[in-house]
Image (cartoon, rainbow, N blue to C red; front, side, top):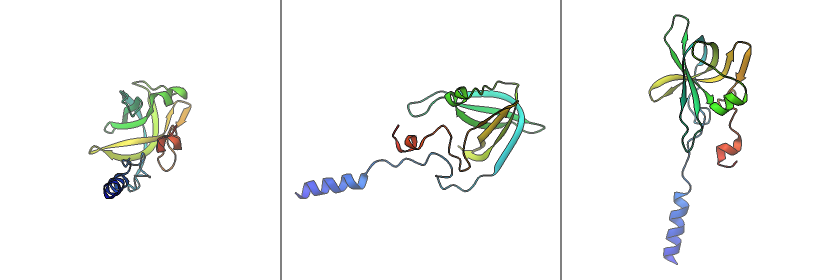
Length: 140
């Protein structure tokens, strides 16, 4: 009986692995600075999908008379679903938050505008609009 109790105690103590919260406001990070960028798209990068993540799209944008800035948008399927296609050389307007990832500051876009087309990507707390609450808890 003692052995069964110890095993049960160990299993309870270990529990399921802790997954870090998926977006900045849930991670308890300090509020980020608001960012607004208008500029020319120098590059479009599509991160290959992995077992956990869908193919995602990032841009490199050069604002007027400034250094290029990396902008993280959304999964490719979300942009496609909303008819938002962005190519090198086009002009875009990005609204979002500056965050530091791997020691580099990037913009997590909350809104992207191209011509007369606007697409909302994240809510005010930074939660991606393509994620449901079920996605965050492992259910679908």
